[in-house]
Image 1 (cartoon, rainbow, N blue to C red):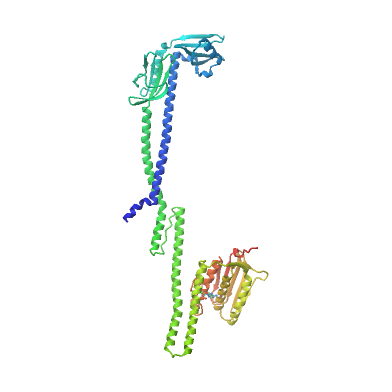
Image 2 (cartoon, protein in one colour; image 1 turned 180 degrees about the vertical axis):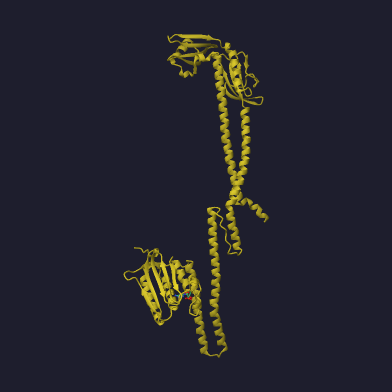
Length: 537
Ligand code: ADP
């Protein structure tokens, strides 16, 4: 149906695909931000480190000239002994330390200090004899060397992105290349980011003691380009991931819901009347398999119930029709006959009898149904089963005698068996079995009612007879309502006795065993589960 198309958004498949999409997109974007933040940070850190160390090298060259190596290794001021620092300070009063170098001779360490006083630059050393030596330097003499170092470094870094610049206090100076055309303006001391002619630069600017400035800068264009390329790759990746996520979500949900759809489709068709329909098991997923199995079991039950209901209704109709027809016949015959009070009275008696048997039939049906559906909860109580069996034997002995049948009752000799059960229902069960045994056993036969114990059971009631027996093909059917074997149709009965026995046994979780040989006799055993024997101390 057309309107059904709009329902696509409510389908599990669509929802699963949608949430997969959202999940994939969210995690990809998060990943992108994390990675790009890390990458950008790393690039800036490397750039800053490069600029700082380059400017530090240039500054050292400006102070010390091309023979930096002869002073040894540059060290931080904190590593210079106090003695040397104090000597520097007293020798060059008001002087400012600019750089310190350490060299070793044998196992002795020497420190060469560079410091300024006003605009003058000095080299200072404390001799091993305790005397101080100082020398006035002329750093402007080092400029050609600095210029050469600019071009050496430029060659190793490449001139596309990096530049170096020197400016003396009087504004004269030189630069490594023309990458940044400005005249040294814009950048503040230390590290800063500036934009010039639309290009971004990271700049390290180092003002020196004499008013000159050394600057190193790197264009951020390369980093920007890399980040842009990275973003582009990510967007492509994201598109792929989203496409894949949606497809995967849809496919997975489709696979998972296929079973559910089959079940709901089957349910619709069963509701339409096809009770025999079952859903095929395809082993898609445990949960779906369980659903299919449960659904099939339910359908099977429903079908059995409906079929049984139909047969029961047919049977009841049939069983009620016979007495009704009889009553009608009686009434007609009486009405057509002589108006004689005696025949009317006879007819009334017969009608009352028929009514009684119909009432009995209806009551029994009701009781079986209630026992089966547990509407009538069992009224369990603890009682002596031995006593109950003994009483049943006594009760039926008269009937047995009338029919010339020997009725024997066998009970455990040494002890009493007690159980927890619905006493009235168990009486009913025993009575129905005994009634059948006496009914289907010819005169001269024997019926034995016995009570015993066995492993895994609280008690076993057995009713054995030497009657007509039951054919194997009837063994299961006789427990169904209204079923009567062909041979017994002439005998009184309505086919409900064993159905009632079965319902009572089921309600007590007891099992019925039938052992019968046609022509020789039958034995019905009711086996009570161990929990029936669990008596409160
Ligand atoms: P009913 O006894 O009223 O016919 P039941 O439900 O008690 O109904 O029994 C169903 C059928 O099972 C009987 O009609 C009979 O054919 C068969 N049956 C039951 N008990 C015995 C028995 N002890 N010996 C032979 N057949 C039996």
